[in-house]
Length: 511
Image (cartoon, rainbow, N blue to C red):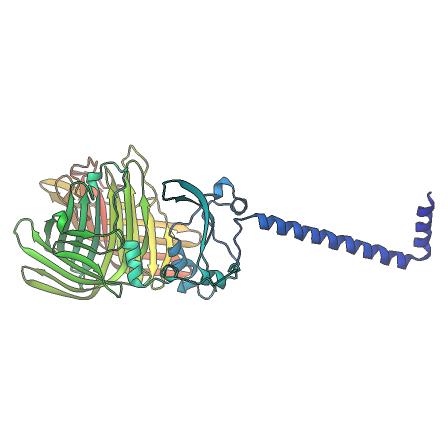
């Protein structure tokens, strides 16, 4: 045994408490040094992680993005984005429904890959970051400003707190067909409105559309008004407008087609004026309505793109109030505080059908739909089933199918067409459940091979397996439980499907 070890053992035996104190102090010192080194290493790693976003208690990321990949800049994190981010901000994260739980919300983009085009045409790859100063400050993530000031500008204000008029123009603007889109001459885009009389016995559909190879080819505008009533014949009024009398914009929602127009008023309501003539009798119709969307009751929109379908759809007024008049040959019906609806479609349609429906039941706004591609291209996707109430967005479901009972019969040009008398769709997501039951009260059937469709499609002979376009008015009953609220509401809605002629049996499931 070495002398040093002998002295240490004797000291430990003779003075154990002093030795234990010294050993404990040494251990504490070593532990503190380890912690300090770990903190320094963590600070160094964070300083190198340029994608690390700070502030707040919760970070909301696009589906499928891993936090570690986002921080280290892996391939999966290079091109991330959150579609409809402003809608999520206004309707989900910073909505009145969640004010008791959410104190502040801040949108942030860090290290987004962009390409900067120089005056000489050279493109440079750059990384850009963006945030709204006041909102970043509210979650404790405001970066230090070395010189000057950094505060919200007007564009920041429009994003975080748009006026109703600004919101309508942002989501309801018009578009141009993509440069590489096939069959550009079949492009169509339209504003669509429907309105129901106070007693629910009469209703009208109004469409203002532009279509064709816009802007350089052959194109023009169209106005279509159809009126319907319980026990009354359907009436159809049409006007075709030359392109020099058409005005639309990719920056706002206003459109004009001759004497007809849709204008967003300063308070965010829509002024709808439509003039057209009946195809058979030559009778004239003039519609003059103001459609006022309910706050928060809108669908922000979706776009589809591909070799077979280019399509977009937005609903600025899922639940709305209508005021005004509809006059036929000078005989007018006044409408005051009645149920109304507005959506906006655009795209190129080739051999596709759709299922669609909307209803208002109490304070519940209901929207469902999908585009069914040709059977030889792809399987139909799940339906989008979307609910709003007086506070805005409530829930989104994805049912696989609508179950129809085709026991009604309508004759079109001598052909018998079986159409739905009832329909049901249902879905569950976690503890939330929803069921929609439809009882059809009226059906209008149009042969797509020979007529202008209500929703603006003018492409004749689209090679549809089911060429008959069916518009339904129905009583809608929605039941279920969503977010702890029990649903049991009833109202009026409108629905669309496609059918073939001479059907001999009822259909259950997707058409």
